Amino acid sequence: MIKSNISENKKQIIKYGQKLGEKNMTPATSGNISMRTGENILITGSGTCLADLNEEEIVLIDTNCNVIDGQIKPSSEKNLHSAIYSIRPDINAIVHCHAPYVSAFAVCHIPLSKPIISENVFYFGEIPVADYALPGSDKLVENTAKYFTKHNAVLLANHGIIIGAKDLKNAYYLTETAETFAQIYLNSMLLGGAKELSKKDIEEIYELRNAMKK
Image 1 (tube, helix red, strand yellow):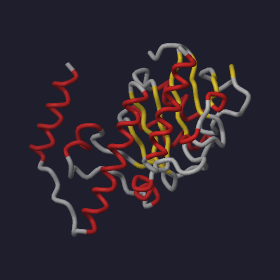
Image 2 (image 1 turned 90 degrees about the vertical axis):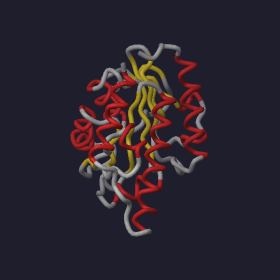
Image 3 (image 1 turned 30 degrees about the vertical axis):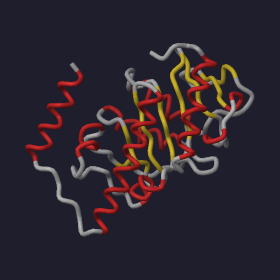
Image 4 (image 1 turned 90 degrees about the horizontal axis):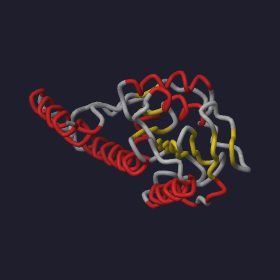
């Protein structure tokens, strides 16, 4: 569980929002970030720019998405964040963004599932695509949250990507990893198609991942 140090957690959100901006993964006012904070959730406000946040633009809500502290509306995706946290007690931070390469796969409804690079197999296994629904809608929650029973990242059809991790640093790292993989995947398609890892190669990667968890 992330400690309930609200000011420190807000600084973390600001830090990694800036990093997302530096990597061109959160243009203008797109995307949102959240963190568990004690029994509640800190989430970026509606219409805020992740690359240029201040503490007043981060809102504290409870698990039912009621505002506890903050002067602006929380992100319209608050219900999706809350649903993911309720499904996955091991997830303490979530990043949703419209990074260009992963979003290209999202708009084409192509999952990032081909085992062509070991890092993606290790960290994700695969990244599925959730059916399209209006951003911020209950249908988006219904279509997307269910994937987090088995996955840590999901492409949102015609939208972007959402990723959960044990803390915000790792959620950011996974976002970078997914975006880089999508870029490699696309480039490999332009070069005629990547050669996939063998079944044996994949099993060895999963064995390594399981051993590192012990």
